[in-house]
Length: 100
Image (cartoon, rainbow, N blue to C red):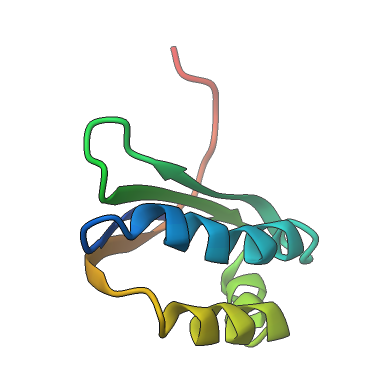
């Protein structure tokens, strides 16, 4: 399994525009084969920061996501939203279990 997690930072007052732009992609992505979780959430402590969490079966599923039409549409929409930066990492998971 793969986890993609991190944060994106918009320029001032860009967070709402980002969340509006990403909503159609989230809905479409959750229907993709191999996608278990796909979420963007506003950071309550920073008005410009958005947290990202994704859970995928494998690299093949993630590659399919990057090649999807809804990802291309999202990338086009992002051209109008100035971003200040991002810090996103991919984690390869060998075992999953409950938190104790």
